[in-house]
Length: 268
Image (cartoon, rainbow, N blue to C red; front, side, top):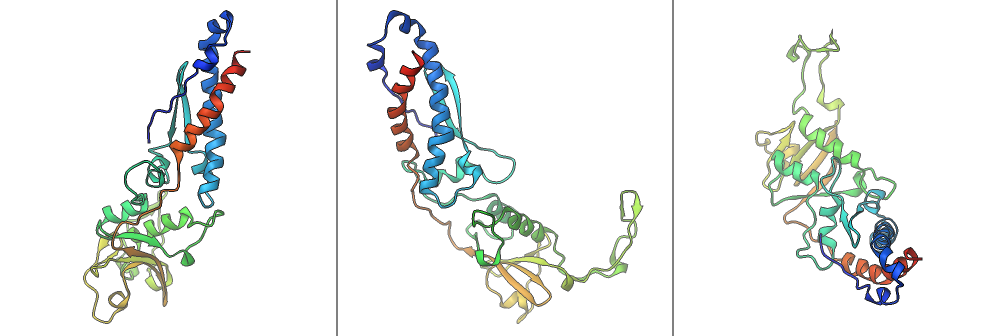
C-alpha cells in the first residue's frame, strides 16, 4: 500500500526572509514530524471510525510514520505482526485505488487450508450467533484459538486407562492415569464440502452411513455429548468486500490542507 503524495511549498518559500530560508530545512523536518503524527495518529484513525463498523484499537493504531528526510515522511500500515492478522493485508482489499476485492485470507483460514481440514477453494465463515464476541461485537480471538486448538487435539475416540502411556510425567512427577471419555469433553471437527472429516489433526476414515458425521452439512463443529454446534460454514469461493476506504484520497487532502500552515508555524 505504498504511493507518493507530494505537496508544492513554493507559495510558502516565496515569502520567506533570508533567515527563514536558512532555517527552511530544519523547519521542513519539524513539519514532517508534525504532519506524520497528525495524519497517522489522529486524522486517519478518526476517518477509520467513520467508514468501518466498530474498528478495534489495533486497526486504529495500525498506521505508522517515519521521517526519512527533511522533506519526506513515510506512512505505512503494520505488517508481519506476531499475533493476529496484518493490517497492511486486511486493509488492502477494501482500499480504493488498489486492484482486487477478494477478502483477506486470515491466519485461521490459512491454518484450515494448510492443516488439510478444507481445500484451498473453501473458506470458513463464522456463525456469529454460536461464537463469543469481543467488546467490538466481533468474534473474539479466543474462539478462533480454541477452534484451531480443538481441531488439532480433539480425540476421535475415547481412551481407557490401559491405553495411556504409563511413562507420562509432568514436572518430573508421574501423572495419575485416568481414562478419557470423549462425551464428557468438547470436541471439534471439520467436514468439508467433499464430505471429508478432519479431527485430532488428521483426516479421519469416511463416516459410517447414517452417522452424525455423515448426516451433518459442511462446516466446523463443536460437540459435547449430544450438544452439537455449528461454528463455521464453508464458502465455496473466496468472499469479496466493498472498497470503502479511500486512504490515498483522504491522506492527499490532509497533506494539501495541513502542510503549508504547519510549515509556516515552524518557520516563526
